[in-house]
Amino acid sequence: MKKKYLKNFNLILVCLIVFIIIEIPTGFFKAKLKLMFSSDDSVIISYNVFPEQFKTFCTDGASSMLLDISLYDSQNAPVPYSLINIETDNFNAVIKPRYPITDKNGRAVIRFIPKLPPIDNYEGINPKDIPVSITISAKKSAPAVWNGNLSMPPVLLIHGFQDTSESLVPMKNYLESRGVRVFSMDYSTNGDFEVMANILEQTLDTIKSECKQTGVLANRVNIVAHSLGGLIVRYYTCRRSYIKNRDVNKIIFINVPHHGTPWAEAGAELLVSPLLKELYPTSNLYTSVFPDSINMGLNHTIQVANIALDNDEVVPLIGSSLDSWGINTKIYHIGEEPLDIKSLTEEPLSGETRHRQILFFIPVFEEVLHYLINDLPYPSKK
Image 1 (cartoon, rainbow, N blue to C red):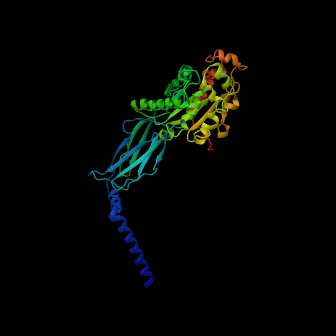
Image 2: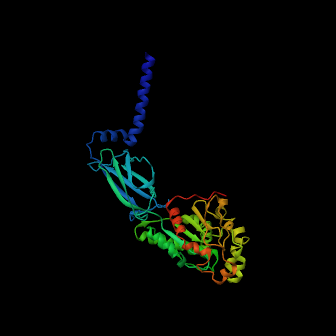
Image 3: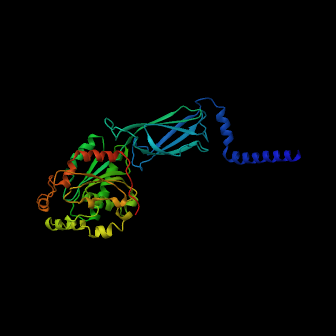
């Protein structure tokens, strides 16, 4: 009997010590008792959104929103250790922490990383202006609601060799008609890859700034790149300076000579373009620069899609493959037989070339939109 009494006494003593250890520095139990006996709707929710100047957040995996929440009672005293309930309407996001609790000062900070909501049919829905809301509630409180918008990340179109952004106007018009924010980039294709990559870096910075001026937070951009443009994107996203920016969300390649093109050596002489020599399969770009870059020249932290023609007269299908990184290629066929080398050199910018005709092919536009809306695979690590 005595042992049993002593055991109960020790248990009570341990509980008392634990209570003192928890209660003195935190006031946890006092706060819980006070909340328990308070009246309904006596708790007031106050919140701030950061960055505060934005009402639209892009679903690029980097443009996160912070919700700084405070709970007060009717006497303006903080309400600590209270569970915050979060309900979202059309707001698909990663929420951290998932079950937030106010600290001893009655505050909780929640991070939202937006994702495009799963929508089967985008007809009539503008992916740059999807209305969403967040409802915040807690025990003994009336709910508070934040209203805003989600947006697909802006899209940058990049043209190929000896071309201009005019070649991408049909695709630009198509994407804009579907509600996508679209930008274009012009550059001289007579420069070297470092210069062209610098232009891309500056363009991406300009796009982010222009979006922010209109109340849209975009920290990463989706890129659709044709031919040489795709190599510039690979070069930029695999150099060390990119690690600081990390400003590309997706890359959609179209007819890109990922492994070079045998046409480049003859084209360099006929078109008097030293740059084309860099596109030959045995050039320094493919034997040294890319192999020594991040993930052998295809950044594994960026989502990727690849489109090619099986009868491209400039880039053979095998040269446009990304199979070694585990990325499948969507293959199209346009027209009949490809043009010969003489026709290409006489009218290198003519819309008659298969290599360029793909930029006017509506099924490709539809596939690009599909890639922009849906998650894409990441290149395997090499």
